[in-house]
Image (cartoon, rainbow, N blue to C red):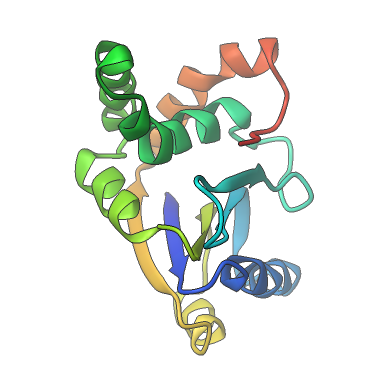
Length: 172
């Protein structure tokens, strides 16, 4: 089973610091990173900067379409208002079908704000106690949605077609 996690940090640099920990944990084979992305939101910016982490992941990565859809729902749809309301509703419905519910989106939206950062990761095979211990001291708050194997496969299928058409990484 894969787990989608969102780690929120109280500074714009916190996610980058946690990323170094995640990279070390993967090298030590204490976690497998299927895909990941970082959001950094400096206090002087109107919106966050996002990027997919290609260096951590293998051929099974979800790709830019997944992260673009997720970050759009979390950070940009509220700014666009009713203009894209129906499309946003459909997108949120698709995410809910694969285990990412409105509560997760709302929670991340309310907590990852100007002056903070977040590390999003789709992981598996974690040695939970070792991973938890490694992240102590990062002053992060963990929000997560667990995805079953079936939901993970469904998620990959949902985004596979658009990734084949647009392999570009997420940029804000």
